[in-house]
Length: 292
Image (cartoon, rainbow, N blue to C red; front, side, top):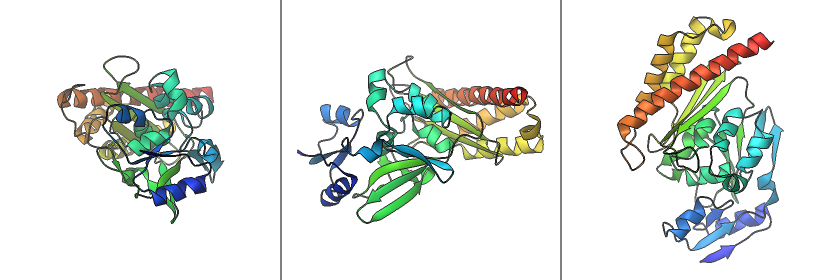
């Protein structure tokens, strides 16, 4: 196995172009597991830990450009206010040691349906910035996941960063696992309210071949909030609306039975998580008005 460790981004892109089969590694929290268990045995490994710009983030054009190498711990500490849903998801990842090493860029590269970062990225219309020696592509997050552990990157591309807009309203994330920590999710759900544009964002994981949005649920809830005037009044939600929202989220799923849970349980759990996160987010939204 060839091991490459470029010192600059230009060197990394050149190495990937010359060795498109090379497996990128940053935190290694996914890659090393697969190597240790012989799930993957690549001809080459491309270590990106020396590329400083991957660990940077900054506001840009009304959004946040977050480098692929920014760790979960830094997302929690530095981006908790601007990206609360993503920070909530980051808090559920592994242990402190894993959060110090692991990155959202690695989660995107692995493209596992169970990755905890995917639901909040979907709920917030993230965009993946991919680079190669040929140029730069911006891939909408809904186009990024192609199948189980398959993403839209070309063989010579690397993830440089992802873009998200700062939160304009409450965000929530919740997941269910077989225990409270150090666990792969049985299912997970993220919700973002976007009152600035009258929209709702959702994302869920571990309940379909890829992470997904519950588009029908988003459209239903946004329409109900607009028709009832609740975006402005922030009055309490109709329980029937909350229930229907949960049903529509569950209907968007296409889960399987596996060692962590049955398809039926995953659908039920997603419905519960959707109702709970909506209730929590709406309480936060109403509380913001009282505070003002």
